[in-house]
Length: 237
Ligand SMILES: *Cc1c(COP(=O)(O)O)cnc(C)c1O
Image (cartoon, rainbow, N blue to C red; front, top):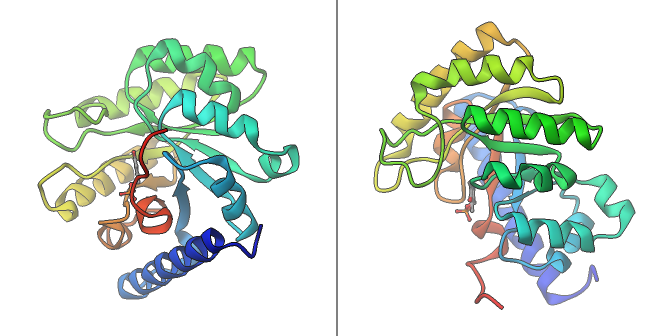
């Protein structure tokens, strides 16, 4: 599969994005090793996940439960075992049990009900789930999920107490139609405060195809990049 045209496109996309990350790190005075790339494969088939794996990608992100579960299930065991699957989409608590079966990390925990549901599901599946608390940086104009900034510390405490969950840090999406930088600065500030109480919560998941430079500048440790690598969203089948 490594030789096909699609693999070439993905290789080029990865090269461009990795070089953008290198430049941004250089500009921010940060070592590239501090920044992980999660390739968001939503809307694209599991064949692309396989190609990305061939190209050295080890972290993939998905945002819809049904699609994610089907695609992860299609991967051969050794490839699956080699990947970290990040669930980054809005999550209903009645889906928590399903998501906990295949996701390694959940970035979108944004309410108490989900802490309980994910914890119970993780314990049932006899695994520990890494979770990030998602923050709504839009000032209430939600729609993309996330907890109010004022609630983040309480949620972080609840995750810390949940035996099936491991608090890794905070996640956010930049608000639509507003500059990303101030939003990511706000997130970095919240992440610092959370880290003061929870030293192991070192992750800051922020930055997508359009704003990864701003995110690196503000201290992001995990970038979630889709279209800049896989191309624009294909027609739904
Ligand atoms: C789709 C998605 C991304 C990736 O967005 P691109 O603009 O395609 O890079 C990142 N984060 C979340 C939460 C997403 O849903």
